[in-house]
Image 1 (cartoon, helix red, strand yellow):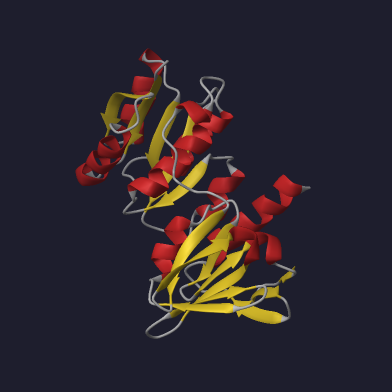
Image 2 (image 1 turned 90 degrees about the vertical axis):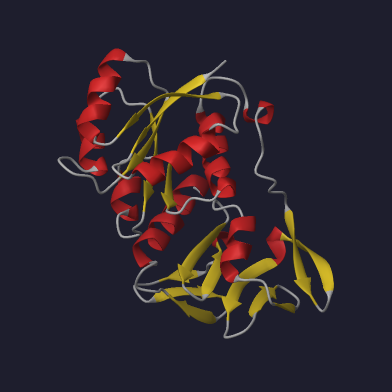
Length: 239
């Protein structure tokens, strides 16, 4: 069973990247590409669409305002170059919020989230992101198997990254963004250019940052809104 989707973005290269990623997932079928939300609205009147990959900042009508016009709307995955709209986006109950340029791994994670929520075929019948309950971290010239539940937070320093576990610390040359791609975004959140934290390990949250095991970790200005939205979304899911 195919899931019909459209890509709505005023940037041709951005549309091309998403359609290229989608071509690698058998259960997705491209119905059309739109450069504006107005084009997408016209297409929705004539075609049955299951999923929309939607840019936010577009001429004539923004992606967020477009969502507000929809009554019986498809699932929506927002794609943008800006973090500042995350809180507003999640208040509109979008499925996911991706930052450009979108890697295939991150794209596939969102698509599997869609399959998990869809009434069609179960997610296990589709490609998987490769995420498990553990990751491997290269440190001391070895690959260390690290259970996700053992990670408290990850800190990026000048030339290396510290992976802070419950009982020890691993020091790796891997980039924090590379590690972020390995981790499921329903369990970890980037709160700062230098900090990636485990959602379940957060003890307190304030306007300045979060606290984990007595250590205060600050929000970065560019990450604050999206981080807070993800943290509270996680709290609501667990409650």
